Image 1 (cartoon, helix red, strand yellow):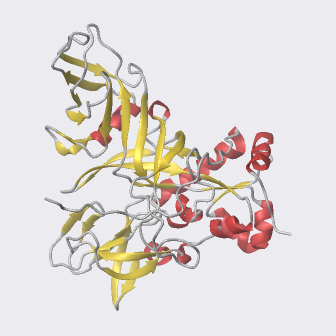
Image 2 (cartoon, rainbow, N blue to C red; image 1 turned 90 degrees about the horizontal axis):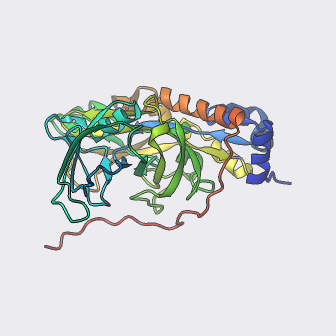
Image 3 (tube, rainbow, N blue to C red; image 1 turned 135 degrees about the vertical axis):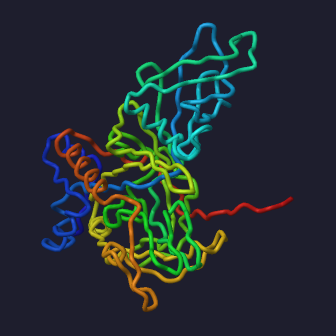
Length: 386
C-alpha cells in the first residue's frame, strides 16, 4: 500500500511537536538510507530555500495623512521615485528604480532595506491640490514605525530554474546575470539547485495561491502566480524544466522582515536589484512527492545561453547539471570554463534551516493552496504594431 498523508495529519503533528522536519539537502541522505517509501513514511515536511537577485520586487506603503492632507502625485523616497498613481497617501516603490542623484548606486531596493532596518527615510511629495486635499507639498522623514502599512509585494520571484549565462562575443558584457567575460571565459548562474523551492515540487502540487512561506525573515504568502509564469517548457525525466518556467508572486509584512534575508544589490553598468530570501515548507503527502524532494544537483539540468546575442530568444549552446555548475568549472565543447553563482548557497541553507526550526519548534503550520495554478500557461512576447 502506498504512503498517503494529508495536510491535516501533518499539521496536527506540527502542533504536537512530533513532526519530522528536514531540509531538502538532508532528505537526500534519508532517501538513500531508507529508500523512497521508507523516507516518505518517516519524513513529514521538507524545507527549501533560495537567496538571489529578484528584480521584480517592491513594496506598498501607506504614509498616513498629513494635516492639512495631501493627495500625493509625485513621490520621492531618499530621492528615489515611488509610484503615486494610487490613493492619496498610498505608494509602490520598485526595487530597480534608481536614485535621481546617485543613479544606480542607490535605488528602490536600498530604500526598502533602509525601512526594514528602522532608518529614517526622506519623503518629499508634491500635488496639484484639490478641495479635499489642499496641500501641495510635504517634506519630512518616515520610518517603519511612523507609517501605517508597509508590505513587500513581489510580482515575480523564485524562478523555477533559470538558464546559465555565457558570452561568445569579443567584448565584456554587463548584465543582470553579472559580468560576462568575452570568448566564453566564464559562466554565471543563479539558483540554489537541490534546495530551490520550485525544483523540489516541479508540478507545484503543494505550492499555489495561499501557500504560507518564509519571506525575508518573516512569514509571508504566495499571493498569485508570478508574472511570466509558464508551464509549457521542455522538462527532464524528473519533471524539472530545463529553462525559466513557473514563478511566484509573494507578499509579507515588511515591518517584520530582517535584512539578514533581504539585501540591496548593484550590478555594474546595469542597475539596482534586490536579493530576496524565500523558503517554502513542502509536506510529504506521498512517495511521488518524496521522490521529487530527494532530487540532487547532478540530476537537475539547465540550458547555457549566449547573452551576446541581443534577441529575446538567445541561442542555447548546451546544457549542464547544477552539479557541474557547483564544481566551479565546466567543460563546454572541449573548453574548460569557470562557473560562478549569483545566488548564495550559504543563505539558502540558512533559510532552509531557519524554516525547519519554525516548523519543528515554533508550530509554523502548512497552508494547503486555496487555489492551484494553471496547468497550461504559455508566454506571450510583445508585438510591435506601430
